[in-house]
Image (cartoon, rainbow, N blue to C red):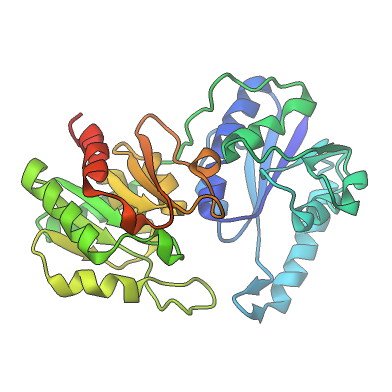
Amino acid sequence: MKILLLKRDKIGDMLLTTPMIAVLRHAMPSALIDVLANDYNAWVVARHPAIDRVWSYPRTRVGRKVRLGAVLKQFALTMQLRRRRYDVVIIAGGEESPRAIKRALTLGASRVIGYCSASTLCAKLTDALPPRPEAHEAQRMIDLLEPLGITPPPTIPDPSYRPEEATLSAAQTWLSEHGIAQFVVIGLGARRAKKQPSADQIVRWADYVFDRYGCESVFMWTPGKSDNALYPGDDAVAEPVLARRHPHIHPFRGPLAPALGLIWHARCSIFPDSGLMHFAAASPGGVVGLFADTSVSPSPKQWGPLGARGRYLEAETSVTELNDDVIFRELDALLAI
């Protein structure tokens, strides 16, 4: 059987697809399993051992700019994929996505599986499943395998990812240059202010891990201005922390790849609900994820960090409400091991 998994979305969403991929490969060891992703998230699974091939299409819109060349390349790729005659296309997402459904329907597979409930596109899917908003995103994607006769496992497999050795080596070089041995990562990157810790909180948390465990802190944030159309940055939020000039807080305002290397080497990490939170959960050190106002924002029941060392805290309206004692308790659980 030839199966194509269609995955749009962001890098954290792609990482949460890896449990589904593992379940599919275990159930169908001889199947051909390919992934179709965009040029932003395809790298997450580029070296996954359960995947035969990753197809990447260029995004037609980056920020406010439309790229005509990308439109032509997408068309050419669609024709190429149609010639491969996939038996099944699975729209790998836990919610209904009309754009993903439309793309999947152009690929000419015998079966197209996806979540759909209210759209007129539902009738065009061979297997339109009702969305299950109460479940974790990783579980929702695993449940998409049921039309293939695959029974979901009793527990969700851990998401899997390991940075390339060159990335890990570059991160280690950065640490050596800064004289850092044991450390934690404290990160920003949630886009919404209610999910971001305050500068005072960050400094207090860094002081705690230094005084109690001898761990320095790598302070990490998304570079750029908050009004960046392509990807909003956290420079303005980070500035009050940098102004304190604490000797055991080391700022890292760098690209994504070395950031992932640092997260992998860390004793543990603290991140707001974000893609990097999920990568930290998949790292050896684990993560304390920060959620807030989940009556209207994503809930950890749906988007919480997975894995044995994935932990989270939930604030009623803002992360700034979280008492230090509850943060320290979660840090102790990860750092005392």
